Image (cartoon, rainbow, N blue to C red; front, side):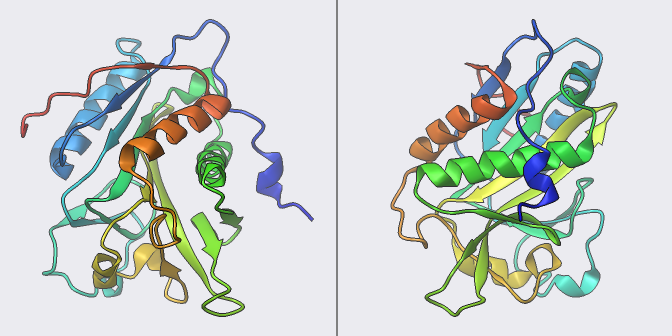
Length: 242
């Protein structure tokens, strides 16, 4: 039987006549504090009608972030990497080189002002992206994110390949998703990722898919457009730390 979430996403298209979503890719590594400050300002501008919607693709230096539900005991190695308090939902997560982070700033009033449907749409985007690389990503009703079964490790073993953590203010979303392309998976051992102890993490390369970040970005854009509508390329933001 298909899950409830399977019925929640047919598309998350904007209202007719809406402008394309800007699509920007940052070069190098982006500082976390600077990224959050930019998102806060851009989300406010979108809500006020002063800026178009934006998907901003970045990589961060190695760091941990704590979501609003983070538990102290899940920060296993507090001195390993910088730790940032984050306003997004969820628990602890890792960001670092080789992981594609997509910050998604959409006006949900122009789409569907329904947070559950929005999270399901983000999951569908990631699952469609993985399918382009012949990877079967799956949802779990009790765990946000996208998971892959690892039968070679055991009948019930599954690993997380992508995480989701969002915040919404005035019905504009920010924060977003992270997809493990080729990060150092040992860096996840300093936390209990998303509070899930009984499962591990994986990446596209760990799953045997030797893919580059530009290849992943191209697929992400195509599958995003299927669910969220047209995009147009834009220059990446210039941040104070650049």
